[in-house]
Image (cartoon, rainbow, N blue to C red):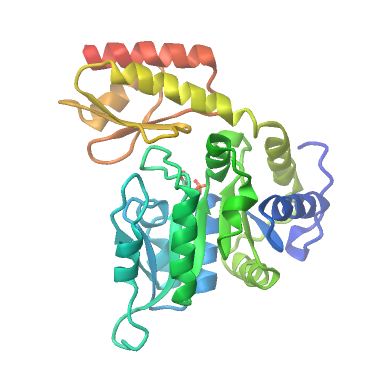
Length: 322
Ligand SMILES: Cc1ncc(COP(=O)(O)O)c(C=O)c1O
C-alpha cells in the first residue's frame, strides 16, 4: 500500500485503481468495473442506476439489501423492495413470477430489478445453485427486468463449487463484489457491468460523495487480496465445517448448515438469546454477532487461524453447555 502508484481517481487517473478495475472486469468478464468504498455502496449504486423513484426491486426476505443497508433503497433512491421468502436464501421461480407487477397496472409500483445474494449471508453462507441463477435470469429477461447480483462473497461460492467468477457474473446486468471480508483487504468493493452502466454508476458515485482521490493505496491492498488470498478461502470453509461439526454434537443447538458450507455459520441455542451468547463468547475472547432475533452468526476469515478455531470451539462448548 505504501508503495502504490497513485493519481486522482476522481479524474480516473489513478493507475493502481485503473489496473484493479480492469483486472476485475476481466475476472467477471464484464465490459467495465468501478472501485467503490463498500458493499453497501456497490449494491445501492447498482439499484439506483437501474431504477427511477417509485420502482420496485424483488429480493429475498433475508437479503442484505433489505435488512442491513439502513433503508437506503427507499431513503436515497426512493425505490421499494419486494421481499420473497426463500429456502436457504433462494427464491422460487413461481414466487418471483407472482411478484412481478403487470406492466399495464399504472397504479402499482413498476417492477424493475430482481436481486439475488450469493453467497447468502443470513442463510448461513448458502450458495445459490447456478441452475437457479440461470432460471431466474430467464424470468428477468422475459419480463424486461434488470438482474443484480450482491456478490459480496461471490468468491466463496466459486471456491465451494469450483465455478469461475464469470460463470456466475455473466448472468447478471450488474454485479457487486467485496474485496474486504474473507479476502482480507481493509476496504473496498467492485461494481461491474456494461461500459454504459458503469458510466452511470461513476456519475452516481460522485454525486453520493464516493469519489476518492489518491485511492490507489486501497486498491493496492484489494489487488493483493485478490491475487494472494483467493485460494485460501478454502481454509475458511474447512474452519466453518469444523465449527458446524462441533456445534452439531451439542444439545439444544440448531445449526443452519446448507451444503456446500462456506465461511458463515448461523446457529441458535435453546434457552439462550443471541445477546447472552454474544456476551458469554466475548468474555472468553471469541467474537460472534447477531443474525436474527434468535440466531447468531460466526464467520471465518483471513485473520482466524486453525488454532483460533480450536479455541472458539472450546468456548462454544463451555458457553452452550454451561
Ligand atoms: C451479502 C452482503 N452484501 C453486502 C454487504 C455490505 O458490505 P459492506 O459492509 O462492505 O458495506 C455485506 C456485508 O456484510 C454482505 O454480507
